[in-house]
Image 1 (cartoon, rainbow, N blue to C red):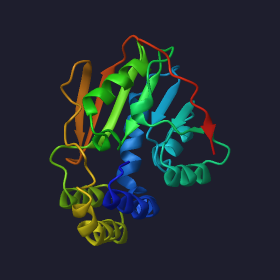
Image 2: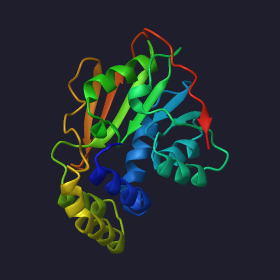
Image 3: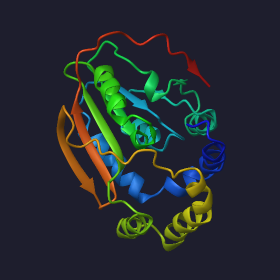
Length: 225
């Protein structure tokens, strides 16, 4: 995600701990809400799929999902979670228009790109006319304390909440040296094409945007394992 050595080291460690941190009841609730927002009958692209926490839940809902994840470490965990799944290694910045309409899901990734506005434009063109973009990410006022409170409200066991807290406290120095986990705090809500926006448990934001006409098509993104 970055050539900065501290960012590289942070994500080398964080990717190994990612499932322990985020495979929880809050993620379950957010993924279920995303599934509710997806219109029936449209194919789904998930970009920045990470280790497949949302991907697994989308598949469990019976959705036809095409998956994109550029980070090799997370991609290995994704394929281990869903053996046989074809995963494209394209990054969000490399996506462009494709014949739609489709639903494009971007969960917990948009705040990590350097130019969220440009990324949103790419995602809307990827969705195509009559398509939809579903963004899930941290709310502007999200904090470690608020996340722990949200996990508790969702019924996460005390051990899970303490593990979430302790891992982030332990990584705090490296997070600070790497410039933080959030490259950008700009919200997707309120931008052109937004159809709805909601905050979940005070820590997560779900935003829906209309797709738009593609200006050119995606090159041959090859599935990798």
